[in-house]
Length: 160
Image (cartoon, rainbow, N blue to C red; front, side):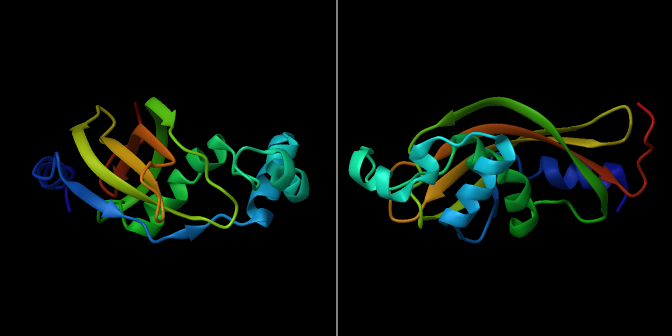
């Protein structure tokens, strides 16, 4: 599909929820791996016994940035990438808010709504998405963000 066709297809979906990821269980091993990778060994995240006794959440919780870092995974799992995309790049965020803690053992998923899209001079399609990361059976989401992704169609150049 040519870049112009892809852009037209995406623009026809602005304002729509275009993808929902499967549920993902945030277990203690996942939290511990993130703690080690980021060198943030706060007891609230990695000490289940202390968290049960002292934390207002009564269990360990995932890091907010851990939840944020799952967006790339969720885009693949949800099938967010447009057809005939050669590769994609995480371009950043306009805003992000961590609304509720993700307790160990809970399941999360992401819902993506396309806010805008345009073609860049290098041929990439720039999509801006409202992302809500839900926690199963909880009223408040874990996170809301406005995320920007660049998708390079197979016929796009790589020169800026």
